[in-house]
Picture: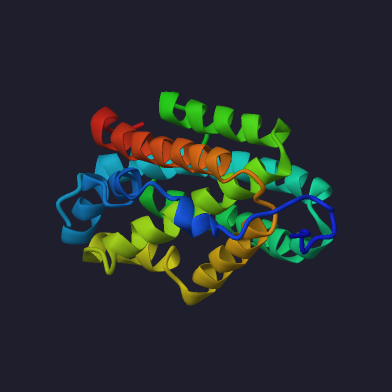
Length: 213
Protein backbone atom coordinates (compact mmCIF):
# COMPACT_ATOMS: atom_id res chain seq x y z
CA UNK A 1 0.00 0.00 0.00
CA UNK A 2 1.09 3.64 -0.38
CA UNK A 3 2.08 5.70 2.60
CA UNK A 4 -0.56 8.07 3.93
CA UNK A 5 2.18 10.71 3.97
CA UNK A 6 2.60 10.55 0.23
CA UNK A 7 6.23 9.44 0.35
CA UNK A 8 5.63 6.54 -1.98
CA UNK A 9 7.19 4.15 0.51
CA UNK A 10 5.68 0.75 1.00
CA UNK A 11 4.20 0.44 4.47
CA UNK A 12 2.77 -2.47 6.37
CA UNK A 13 -0.46 -3.01 8.23
CA UNK A 14 1.38 -3.89 11.45
CA UNK A 15 0.63 -1.30 14.16
CA UNK A 16 3.66 -0.20 16.11
CA UNK A 17 2.02 -1.31 19.36
CA UNK A 18 1.96 -4.88 18.04
CA UNK A 19 5.75 -4.89 17.69
CA UNK A 20 6.46 -4.61 21.41
CA UNK A 21 8.28 -7.44 23.15
CA UNK A 22 5.81 -7.82 25.99
CA UNK A 23 8.28 -9.35 28.43
CA UNK A 24 10.92 -6.69 27.82
CA UNK A 25 8.29 -3.96 27.92
CA UNK A 26 7.02 -5.19 31.28
CA UNK A 27 10.54 -5.05 32.71
CA UNK A 28 10.78 -1.43 31.56
CA UNK A 29 7.32 -0.28 32.64
CA UNK A 30 6.71 -2.34 35.78
CA UNK A 31 10.13 -1.80 37.33
CA UNK A 32 10.64 -2.01 41.11
CA UNK A 33 11.38 1.74 41.09
CA UNK A 34 7.82 2.34 39.91
CA UNK A 35 6.32 -0.08 42.39
CA UNK A 36 8.18 1.75 45.14
CA UNK A 37 6.79 5.07 43.90
CA UNK A 38 3.33 3.55 44.10
CA UNK A 39 3.65 2.15 47.63
CA UNK A 40 5.85 4.93 49.03
CA UNK A 41 8.86 2.75 49.84
CA UNK A 42 11.20 4.52 47.38
CA UNK A 43 14.09 6.40 48.95
CA UNK A 44 13.73 10.13 48.28
CA UNK A 45 17.35 10.32 47.13
CA UNK A 46 16.70 7.69 44.46
CA UNK A 47 13.75 9.70 43.19
CA UNK A 48 15.85 12.87 43.18
CA UNK A 49 18.57 11.12 41.20
CA UNK A 50 16.01 10.02 38.65
CA UNK A 51 14.47 13.50 38.47
CA UNK A 52 17.66 15.42 37.70
CA UNK A 53 18.89 12.82 35.22
CA UNK A 54 15.52 12.74 33.48
CA UNK A 55 15.73 16.50 33.14
CA UNK A 56 18.93 16.00 31.15
CA UNK A 57 17.14 13.41 29.02
CA UNK A 58 14.24 15.78 28.29
CA UNK A 59 16.76 18.40 27.16
CA UNK A 60 18.20 15.82 24.76
CA UNK A 61 14.71 14.80 23.63
CA UNK A 62 13.86 18.43 22.80
CA UNK A 63 16.93 18.60 20.57
CA UNK A 64 16.08 15.30 18.88
CA UNK A 65 12.42 16.09 18.32
CA UNK A 66 13.09 19.57 16.93
CA UNK A 67 15.41 18.03 14.34
CA UNK A 68 12.89 15.30 13.54
CA UNK A 69 10.25 17.95 12.86
CA UNK A 70 12.38 19.32 10.04
CA UNK A 71 12.40 15.98 8.18
CA UNK A 72 8.99 14.68 9.16
CA UNK A 73 6.20 14.00 6.67
CA UNK A 74 3.69 16.84 6.51
CA UNK A 75 0.92 14.89 8.25
CA UNK A 76 3.10 14.24 11.29
CA UNK A 77 4.30 17.78 11.89
CA UNK A 78 1.36 18.97 13.97
CA UNK A 79 1.73 16.24 16.59
CA UNK A 80 5.50 16.78 16.72
CA UNK A 81 5.12 20.54 17.08
CA UNK A 82 2.62 20.09 19.89
CA UNK A 83 5.05 17.75 21.58
CA UNK A 84 7.84 20.31 21.34
CA UNK A 85 5.71 22.92 23.11
CA UNK A 86 4.96 20.34 25.80
CA UNK A 87 8.67 19.59 26.23
CA UNK A 88 9.44 23.27 26.75
CA UNK A 89 6.75 23.36 29.43
CA UNK A 90 8.16 20.13 30.86
CA UNK A 91 11.59 21.66 31.32
CA UNK A 92 10.05 24.59 33.19
CA UNK A 93 8.13 22.13 35.37
CA UNK A 94 11.35 20.26 36.16
CA UNK A 95 12.92 23.54 37.25
CA UNK A 96 10.01 24.18 39.60
CA UNK A 97 10.18 20.66 41.05
CA UNK A 98 13.94 20.91 41.51
CA UNK A 99 13.60 24.21 43.35
CA UNK A 100 10.94 22.75 45.63
CA UNK A 101 13.15 19.74 46.39
CA UNK A 102 16.36 21.75 46.77
CA UNK A 103 18.07 20.11 43.79
CA UNK A 104 20.51 21.40 41.23
CA UNK A 105 19.75 20.51 37.62
CA UNK A 106 23.31 21.37 36.57
CA UNK A 107 24.59 17.82 36.90
CA UNK A 108 26.63 15.57 34.66
CA UNK A 109 24.84 12.77 32.86
CA UNK A 110 25.29 9.43 34.56
CA UNK A 111 26.07 6.42 32.34
CA UNK A 112 22.40 5.49 31.79
CA UNK A 113 21.60 9.06 30.74
CA UNK A 114 24.66 9.08 28.48
CA UNK A 115 23.38 5.88 26.85
CA UNK A 116 19.94 7.47 26.39
CA UNK A 117 21.53 10.50 24.72
CA UNK A 118 23.53 8.20 22.45
CA UNK A 119 20.35 6.40 21.43
CA UNK A 120 18.74 9.70 20.45
CA UNK A 121 21.84 10.62 18.44
CA UNK A 122 21.60 7.33 16.55
CA UNK A 123 17.90 7.83 15.88
CA UNK A 124 18.61 11.35 14.65
CA UNK A 125 20.64 9.98 11.74
CA UNK A 126 18.55 6.85 11.21
CA UNK A 127 15.67 6.46 8.73
CA UNK A 128 12.46 8.32 9.56
CA UNK A 129 10.80 5.02 10.50
CA UNK A 130 13.32 4.44 13.27
CA UNK A 131 13.01 7.99 14.57
CA UNK A 132 9.22 7.89 14.81
CA UNK A 133 9.13 4.40 16.29
CA UNK A 134 11.79 5.37 18.82
CA UNK A 135 9.98 8.57 19.82
CA UNK A 136 6.68 6.74 20.23
CA UNK A 137 8.43 4.05 22.26
CA UNK A 138 10.01 6.61 24.57
CA UNK A 139 6.74 8.40 25.25
CA UNK A 140 4.75 5.17 25.50
CA UNK A 141 7.12 3.84 28.15
CA UNK A 142 6.57 7.02 30.18
CA UNK A 143 2.81 6.64 29.90
CA UNK A 144 2.79 2.93 30.73
CA UNK A 145 5.37 3.24 33.50
CA UNK A 146 3.70 6.05 35.39
CA UNK A 147 0.29 4.48 34.86
CA UNK A 148 1.71 1.39 36.58
CA UNK A 149 2.90 3.61 39.45
CA UNK A 150 -0.46 5.40 39.75
CA UNK A 151 -1.83 6.88 41.84
CA UNK A 152 1.52 7.00 43.64
CA UNK A 153 2.26 7.47 47.30
CA UNK A 154 1.40 10.90 48.64
CA UNK A 155 4.96 12.26 48.41
CA UNK A 156 5.17 11.30 44.72
CA UNK A 157 1.55 11.75 43.63
CA UNK A 158 1.99 15.15 41.99
CA UNK A 159 4.69 13.72 39.76
CA UNK A 160 2.72 10.59 38.85
CA UNK A 161 -0.34 12.67 38.00
CA UNK A 162 1.78 14.92 35.80
CA UNK A 163 2.79 12.00 33.60
CA UNK A 164 -0.59 10.26 33.37
CA UNK A 165 -2.91 13.00 32.14
CA UNK A 166 -5.48 12.22 29.42
CA UNK A 167 -3.78 14.83 27.24
CA UNK A 168 -0.52 12.91 27.40
CA UNK A 169 -2.34 9.73 26.39
CA UNK A 170 -3.80 11.53 23.36
CA UNK A 171 -0.34 12.76 22.39
CA UNK A 172 1.13 9.25 22.63
CA UNK A 173 -1.71 7.93 20.47
CA UNK A 174 -0.95 10.60 17.88
CA UNK A 175 2.69 9.58 17.79
CA UNK A 176 1.55 5.99 17.36
CA UNK A 177 -0.46 6.93 14.29
CA UNK A 178 2.54 8.76 12.85
CA UNK A 179 4.75 5.73 13.48
CA UNK A 180 2.21 3.32 11.98
CA UNK A 181 2.18 5.32 8.76
CA UNK A 182 5.94 5.17 8.19
CA UNK A 183 6.78 1.61 9.19
CA UNK A 184 8.10 -0.36 6.25
CA UNK A 185 10.30 -2.85 8.12
CA UNK A 186 8.50 -4.30 11.17
CA UNK A 187 11.50 -6.37 12.29
CA UNK A 188 13.72 -3.29 12.33
CA UNK A 189 11.04 -1.32 14.16
CA UNK A 190 10.80 -4.06 16.79
CA UNK A 191 14.54 -3.83 17.36
CA UNK A 192 14.27 -0.09 17.94
CA UNK A 193 11.53 -0.67 20.50
CA UNK A 194 13.69 -3.24 22.25
CA UNK A 195 16.49 -0.66 22.46
CA UNK A 196 14.09 1.87 23.97
CA UNK A 197 12.80 -0.60 26.54
CA UNK A 198 16.34 -1.55 27.55
CA UNK A 199 17.29 2.12 27.87
CA UNK A 200 14.30 2.80 30.12
CA UNK A 201 15.05 -0.23 32.30
CA UNK A 202 18.62 0.93 32.73
CA UNK A 203 17.45 4.42 33.66
CA UNK A 204 15.31 3.07 36.53
CA UNK A 205 18.19 0.80 37.59
CA UNK A 206 20.52 3.80 37.67
CA UNK A 207 18.25 5.71 40.06
CA UNK A 208 17.78 2.74 42.35
CA UNK A 209 21.45 1.82 42.50
CA UNK A 210 23.38 5.06 42.54
CA UNK A 211 21.68 7.14 45.21
CA UNK A 212 21.65 10.91 45.26
CA UNK A 213 23.29 13.03 42.60
